[in-house]
Image (tube, rainbow, N blue to C red):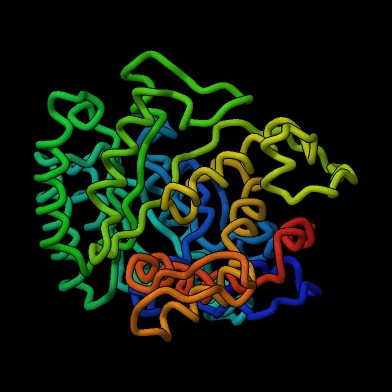
Length: 379
């Protein structure tokens, strides 16, 4: 896979790399971008084979909240059928391994995880990137990760885990810090298998009986923002090297004739926060939230509609100014120096962690000239 392949005419300052599940973890963890969630009952194989989902690089087929309990047998059968279709397409050279998105399965619970994985063959495991663990907490976490470790040994394949932090213990202030301390210690023991840490703000919001509207972001919902702040604090400190994926945006308005308004006198960040109309209310809201995701250290985002993919992934691209600043910081041993654009200071030690993330994002998403290139990537 490679990001932005739908826009083959776009000229990058530095092209994004190709990747698959065997790419080194320290790079791959940056590459997920827009991770599309869908019910496990969804027939998706033909769309992957025929490249109908523009920009899709990572996806999750869900056995949990996206389906009813009665639909679980149907979902499990459909996932097996999907994997088999993809294997046949690979064998017939209808697609290559580099055409396959990173495929993850969100399990329903520990029991279903153990029972379902008994059905998987080695060939099916080979095209899976891993599993997503809902409502991951200090009570079930070790059991999930221990079974994941056994699967890796059993199949001699890499299968990653992505815990979703969305439990009541994290939502409530009186239990949150203790729970985060335990989770951090637990995840460290299995760090080589943790590709991303995800956050479930729909579940967190439900605990407080709130839901964000289309005109504001998850960061405006105070109890949820408070929880996100502590999760970021625990898992994105310098030296921790965990990648947090941003929460889902729930709104979509799809119009095949969608066009950009020609109000690009301002940069995209300024236009969005001035509430200038760019695409439509749902997509503009998504873009505003992605900007805040990035500002708070999230990389990539859970998405629930294919129309979101190219917008989330385009906004992960690194501008040339960011890239030059990062290079300058990483190549300098200490002190303070004027940036290459002569518009800011680059303080080497405090900015090094930021620069390292920018460098890895530049590999995954490429380097663009400036903010106006985001619009060109959207197209």
